[in-house]
Amino acid sequence: MEKYHILERIGEGSFGKVYRGRRKYSGHVVALKFVSKQGKSVRDLENLRQEIRILHQSDHCNIIAMMDSFETDKEFCMVTEYAQGELFQVIKDERSLSECEIRRIAIQLVQALHALHSNNIIHRDIKPQNILIGSKQQIKLCDFGFARAITNDASLVKSIKGTPLYMAPELLQEKPYNHTVDLWSLGVILYELAVGKPPFYTERIVLLIQMIVRDEVDYPSTMSVELQSFLKGLLNKDPAKRLKWPEILEHPFVQETPKQLETRLQLERQAHSLPRFSAENELHDAFMEESEAKMMSLPISMRKLSNG
Image (cartoon, rainbow, N blue to C red; front, side, top):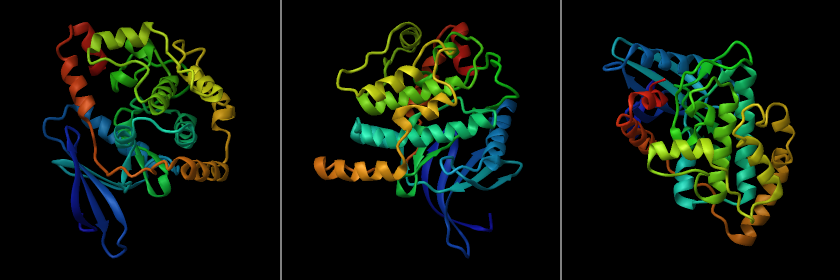
């Protein structure tokens, strides 16, 4: 830690504390995440080590970069690149975005997930709180504590992790699953960005599970054909029929180049005075923590959804 100056605390929760810091001599701004080992189970500690391993191995512009890591008898410390914004805050502030802005986000998230899945890694906890916004509005996928490495494309055992709101139906039904659970979560997030709310939402966890498993998604008539087609492919309840690689990369909704997108965004902002992303860096785990608390009030058979 002698290599870093701590500047300010920017987040705190059950996961630990996050600080904005600066590397000595170079002045490079970083994020430092400290996680105490106290009270953590063997599984919790292994999840942390797994996150560190995955981030050290990952090298993609849309995945948060791990710059350094330390482990002592009392805590873990992860040093990553600093991203000032968070998609959760954008949703909170703006409610919904234009399809042009959604397309920009979708293209980057698709690239991040393709990089992970190509390396046989499933994130398993894709949600707005785990999507940061860096300089030049570059999307950064983070928080790999629930990620899992796989050896092939076969379905995985029924190990459940993640936030219920963004979980795929097969997870909630305690069925084997594969990387397509991340693609369902991507669909939920993009739908939320377009409509202003997730496709399925209620504060009652049991009812939420039933809705995700049984109910059909309602697509607004104002949604473009391209976006609706993309979301229908991602939000197919049957994982075997869900959009897969490489078809996702070839879908028209994510085909525009960054230059084409930027030109269209500039014209759109001039016409409608749309705000640019300006989220402050806060780590909002409120829904996750509330969901976990509610899960503990369910019957034992249902608690498996949060405990794995």
